[in-house]
Image 1: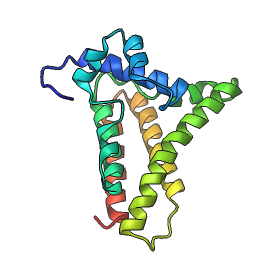
Image 2 (image 1 turned 135 degrees about the vertical axis):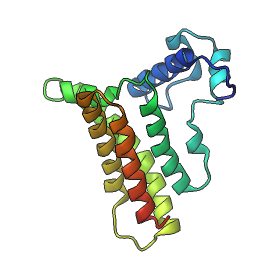
Image 3 (image 1 turned 30 degrees about the vertical axis):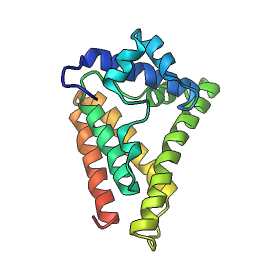
Length: 180
């Protein structure tokens, strides 16, 4: 974000539109222009809030900083009263048994998230704990499982703090296995 005078509603519209489009079309096939159109704002508004469509933590050089940045991004997202949950998680819970095509799209969405995290975990493992015996794929899926489970608990308890606390535990766990 570039300014302290940002309108949180406009920013949230952009984030929601980006999420919706990226879940449908994928990250690469979603343009900034499409996000702006879906959010009903100008391209100038987009760049008022964001330098580009890539999350800031993705630009970090150190792979472990990217991993922690991802966790911090999820925690920050959970703190926003505008965040209503995860579209993929909601769809797969409600429709996986009755709509196999939707289940497949959701599975691909989760796989994409896990793959990006796995890549960062692999690089961080090679750099910091090359002899560790854990699987980066399994750990990436575990992080997603905790996040999704926390969203469900937060909805049941009507308390989004559950998400923040669960992800803080994951962050501490990751610090421990990387010796940080």
